[in-house]
Length: 213
Image 1 (cartoon, rainbow, N blue to C red):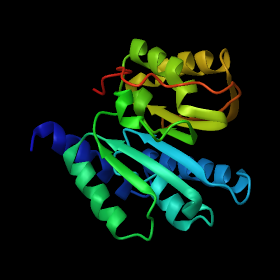
Image 2 (cartoon, rainbow, N blue to C red):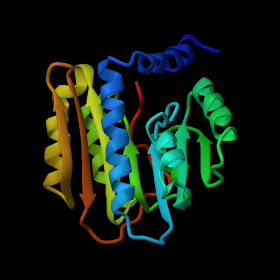
Image 3 (cartoon, rainbow, N blue to C red):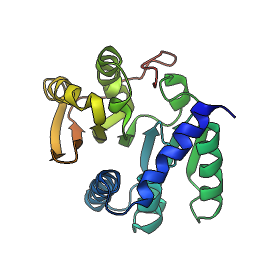
Image 4 (cartoon, one colour):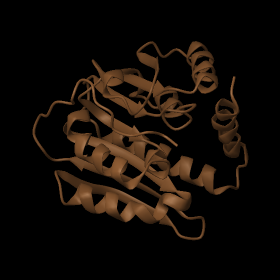
């Protein structure tokens, strides 16, 4: 176990403070995901992927509690061993049987093989922890993650929040249409979702999108 492992595991304790910016951001993301399931076509199977899933406190509660949760096959990709161990335990305590955990690098497209294209693509905090060049590369690759009509849900905060406008611009000048955008200037975070309006696309089977700092 390294100090880095402990840092990313302990980071999630912020959600234990019910009056924090982190909890507010989490609740907004959960609401967006729940609304997306509300609007999904009935009686259809759905796919979701979570990039750098952490402890999946955003996606898992929605899948557990939403009536459509059992219609979703999800791929969680998480490199941190402590967070991955937490996820193994969390999944074992639920009735979800179509959630797959890959313990691996979220920036390596090989870890999404078989899980994309997806209806829901979740990048919680990814753009808050990668460089501008990596963010540009990741947005460029997003069509390969999405089914036509798929929804990308993402957030940013902290020192990298200033770069979020460039992510917005790249998405909206490409094949993505804004679905929702919530800014909290006092608490300095952004939650956004964008609908993929393009055609079928393929994700490169083995490429490096970003390095998580």
